[in-house]
Length: 179
Image (cartoon, rainbow, N blue to C red; front, side, top):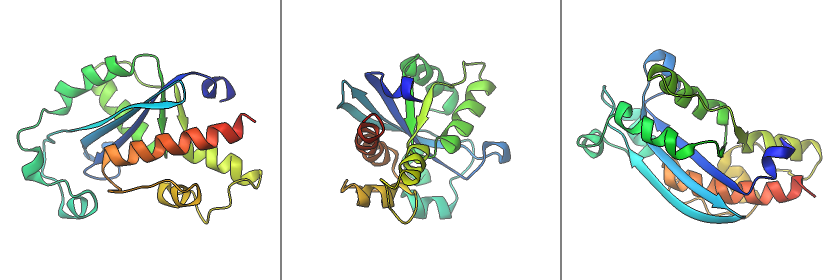
C-alpha cells in the first residue's frame, strides 16, 4: 500500500446503487468522482445513471435519487466504457472499496472492460491508524471518520459529496501513514 500512497494522482470514487449486491441484480444509479492531483483536490462531479429497474423507495429515502431524476440519463453500458478510460491506470480511492469495486468490477466484466485492481481503501487505512492508536473514532464509517478529522460531510449518500469527503479524509490519513 505504501507504494500506492506515494503516487501523486488519484481518483476517488463512490457509487450509489439500487441495493447491496450486483449479483442480486442491483444496479449503479450514480457515480461520483473527485480527482486528487499533487495533494490538491482538482475536480469533483457525479453522474446519474438510468437503471433497468425502478429505484426502490428505501434507496430513494437514503440517497434522495428518484426514478424521475434518472429517467433521461444514460444507461450503465453507455457510461462505463468512458468511465473506465477516464480512470486509466490511476489509483482508485474509495471508502469501503470492496463494496464499490464489487459493483464496478461486476459491470466492467459484464461489458468486457478491464477490471480495476489498483486501489486504496480509506476504511482499511483507518483500521491501520486505529491499530496504532492514532484514529480513535467509535467506528470506521465515513461520517464518523469525517467528524473525527473535522471534515464537512454535507449531503451524505450522494456520490459527489461522499467522494469529496473521502478525498479530504484520504489526504489527512495518508499524511499520518507516511510519517
